[in-house]
Structures are given as structure tokens and as C-alpha cells.
Amino acid sequence: MKLSLRPATDADYLFAFELKKLCEQDVITRQFGWDEELQLELHRQEWRSGLPTLICADGIAVGTFRLHLHDDRFHFSRFFILPAYQNQGLGSEILTFVTKRCTQLQRACLLCCIQGNRATELYQRFGFKTYRQDCQFIHMKFQPTDD
Image 1 (spheres, rainbow, N blue to C red):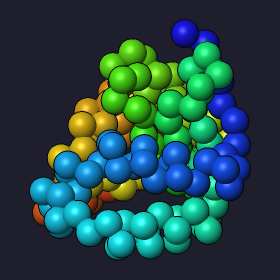
Image 2: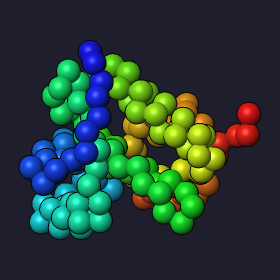
Image 3: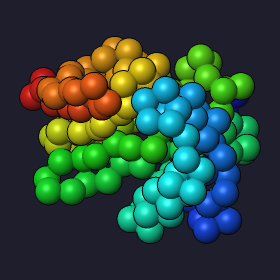
């Protein structure tokens, strides 16, 4: 499978929402209850704040993520991969890309995920460490080393 990345366009808006729903609906439902209108509004707000990058496998969109620089550090978010493409190394390839970029530029990377998100273990394997958590969210940070 050949992995490629491309910037999202407005044509990807519904794909990105349906992807988020497929990947997070269960955990959001357990934490807060699923409110379709609220989730659509949150998606609209996130979309307006900056478009994600699409993860493509053999030219087909199978995931998203957003990595942006803000206040001298990266923020990683909206990381979703279609269930049929999970556990095939795509997440590791994306996190390798992210951590290499952070290391090259000597910038920390922050992320926040909901409690119960299975990707937390993947983040830890790539050097992200929890610096704050509560009953709803886990805040993690990758700090590049100088070597």
C-alpha cells in the first residue's frame, strides 16, 4: 500500500465529518453522549480554523490529521483513519512524519485526546508523554531531543 498526503479541500468536508464519526462516535457517546447537531457545529468550527491533511492509501482518502505551528510549538489534531485501514502501520507512518518534523525544527508538539481513545498507546510509543489529564481528556506532549 502506497501512502500519500494531500491538503484537504472543501470537497472533503463531509468525508472528514463521517470519518470522525466512524472513529470517535463510540468514545464520545460514552463520555458525553452523541449530539449530532453539536458534533456538526464542532466540525464546522474546526474546519474554519484550518483544513486537515488527507491520508491516502493507493490514492484513496482513508484518514486525516492536522499539524500546525502555533506559539512556537506544533499542535497535532484530527487524527483519524478509517477502521478498515487501522492496524496496518499507517498511524505509525504519520507519527513518524510528525515526530521527525518536530525534531528537525526543534519544536515541541502538543495533542489532546479524549479518554478512552485507543491511539493514546500509539502516541506513547512515539514519545508523547502525558502532562495533564482529567476524567474527559488526556493532554500529551512530544519534546524532541538534541541528538
